Image (cartoon, rainbow, N blue to C red; front, side, top):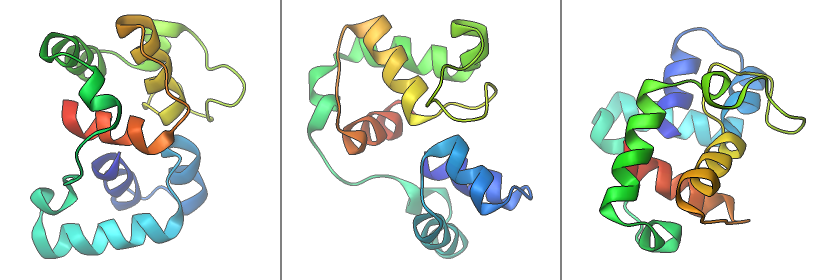
Length: 122
């Protein structure tokens, strides 16, 4: 999510659009932009361990990685549901949660755990 948020903002998307698409607040995105300028992509990697990432096998992570890189949410789920953000072109926390539930039968109400999972699958 960090990379996506930085990429969107750097491509000219406004703060509200970036927040709607990624679920990340303006201060976080500002901090990540600075980190990206200072340290590059490596600076955006999540260094935390644990959470739902520990509940997913290497094979499940591979499946998620392929789906996240090969498809948009609209291609897998159709038009976005209420509460999933305004975009059907970019992965959001809500649509990643939906994909993890669908592909791995793992649910989490904790957004940070899904963010960590996203970082782990690239």
